[in-house]
Length: 375
Image (cartoon, rainbow, N blue to C red; front, side):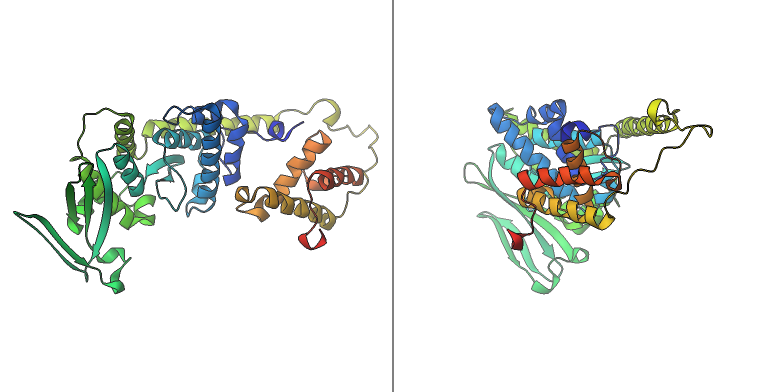
């Protein structure tokens, strides 16, 4: 029995943990959905590599998100939908790039393009060579005017007020077109506040977590209307899709669909738990002799030491896949032990000395789990 046969990606259940994103790699249909969504004429290996990279980005993204617990309560299907959309737009979930974010809306994981993602999509169209947004705070020196010679801009930031969203005065955008021309867009704080209030989620997680970034995006969205169109190239279509995605924020019909999936999954689990037990595992009547107790398993400390050493080995092999090692080490060892022994393990305490010895022998042979100072 392999690890992928023991633990599988469940679209109908809650994601439960960031590392469960990795299980998508073992779901052929789900992985193919992502791989086939990337734009361009890519060979199969390149698509697999990009799929692996995106799933690992999602794992780290969720693990480090302020909304981690809420995302983990979202259905696996909604997380998969987000990854498919992210692949189709060819955006990254790496925090440093800021292309896109996973946001939970009422139990549904939703992909929200960030302002840097929109910059990338606009530049990809080929109409704009360079684009930059700048926040002006109340104590900054700022002036802008146009005359017969063109636009004139002067901005001297005040170091003391930088980064304070409550002190935002306006946001402006400067862009260089593909033919060397310049374009300018600006929105003051009143206009930006009007955009926020017209949003479906004016006090939602996006505005709470990234208020200044949302203001930058508002200016970019206004500017996008003046970007030349008409080439109908794939990049323009991706930009249009991102705008539609950002407009909807979340689809109420999808929310109902995902909720029904989660409810059905819960009902199925309850029915299985309440089903009568038959066969060898059925409870014995009072007249039947009771079997002797199972020999004592290894001490809990010994068992914990075993899986902790294995977890260290796993961290050495796949460091990016273990953002929360302590929370996952026991689960990791349970799955590994089951794959070695060929049967499910309900709890580590169920391992008898012989089983534990077999697992540790396999681990020693295939994973150098000794502490670094003993190697």
